[in-house]
Image 1 (tube, rainbow, N blue to C red):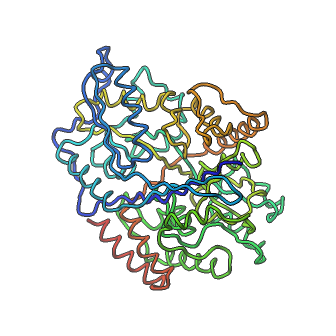
Image 2: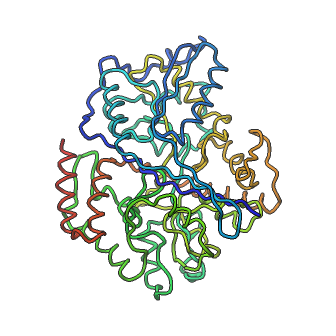
Length: 514
């Protein structure tokens, strides 16, 4: 009997800097150390601390890396500090037999706020950890306040670092104001699939891994074809919970994210909720739901009992024109029907829908045509650090083939090192990762010819899509939290769209002007 493993991650990584203004770094801040000081023949020595809020993605990986690094460089000490609570796990019986395991990551905004305030205070006082995981910390504010080292100069000057070993467009996309203030270890992206039985071949001729679409564009294609027998989109109009990276909000989240800069300009610190466009966005989504194009709003956070019930549902029966998902699920699209596929992953809004006829429509784009990415692990060097050389060498080690293929690097995303992509895919397509049979790093996985052909097709499609990435959508999570709180009142009927827009203009405008 196949073992089924379902994973639902309700992660709300919402940055809260309330009550903690960010100013210029302390006088002890050193900024970017010159290459002549950084790259010497002297043995590495000293101590550094790496701080991360997110335990599930970072802790085991960083602890493994620290132990290996200290063994390679006697005389060094790497201390790992992580702060979030580990998730609750539960196992049970899946429909049709077999075991199912569910992991839920609870949101803890207060713990996150306390962590950010602590780090901010330390940085402003001229201290703080040597390496910062930018999982919940505000990249833009810390970079523009001088708290972070520009790592692009280190990459360019380090004779042992070759950018061509990596997905360089991810590094380029992560730059802000001409500098690379953190290094993403991995990346993921959103993509759309379409039901090939619902959209005529002629209208789908522009679809494929090499294409990019905003959801607004896709809806224009499908709306005239809708006859009431299928949903247009698999996401609800609004959801109070969501997936990794704090991406919550259902269809609302998607459409807002595609055109975020039209409503908020973080660089100029201005809000634009009162010009009619935000009201139009809310009303258009409500109209989609009233016509039966999308599922209704979902409130609250599901508990593990609800998740277990969702994960053990009967055979899907509903057709949907378009579905969205994160690139971690792209492997599953190419693993359908393989005997090695012993994993069933559930995601927001996709349960109960037929997927056998789904094909790739394209990678998700912003309305301006740019293609964004997200990350689970990314690291910056504190400009106050007295041992930036050791900090940089440790980040380089995190980018090594050994660590990029580590089984402790949770592969909901894709490693940025090119040589690591295929070995990680092999663990999935061989089925070994689902049976706990990881194998030694660098050892080819045993898989059928059918599975290897599917893996090669996946790698080609994923490469087509990843090459298009050219931006990192910079968001302010305090603003995101304000929007979520207000918009939930619209979708539950407590406020009109005009009332929500007016309140957001006042609240967000005041926050941005501080």
